Length: 231
Image (cartoon, rainbow, N blue to C red):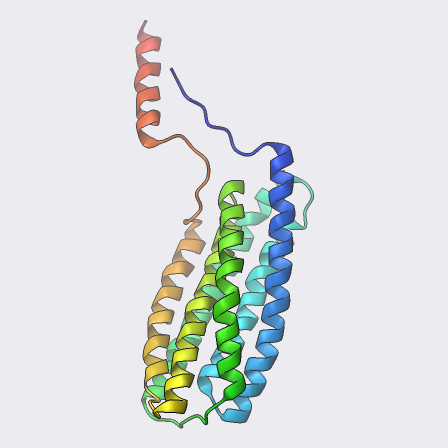
């Protein structure tokens, strides 16, 4: 006998949609403030890491704005129709972030200039490291239950910001404490590689757990269906 697993009910879908809208709005607001602080602190300290962190926040805003645009539609069918374009915007955001971080890390490693210690930058990176995982996890859960690949992709963008926060925090702290200017660009290259991977997933629409039947159940159903047809 075939086992059919349905997605969320219309009422539950509305709840999840409102939740994603709130989370996206919170992400946009936080990242706008984060970008302003990081770019200002980075310019004052001549820190390419902080400037890159601020540009990442701007990319975060564009990614979240794409999801906000998708979920601004009240009709579920229209939201699904917009998802493909939203995923492409998110993917391009990942690739742009990876390109900038990689170039910036290469410049830092070749010794194009050292940054001064930045206490505001350390505080900002630590705060983002504490806030971003919760926003990412909440949006990822809602997106997976709703079956929205764009919401899940945007949550991955937010999670990547968490990793970047850790890298920036480590780089700023090591630079301020020991003068190790090479620590941040090495971590940034790892972040760039992750960004490329996540960008490819977003471009292909992967990474979203849409409710479906297990593979074994699908195979069993298919076999049963053939037997019934023969009978």
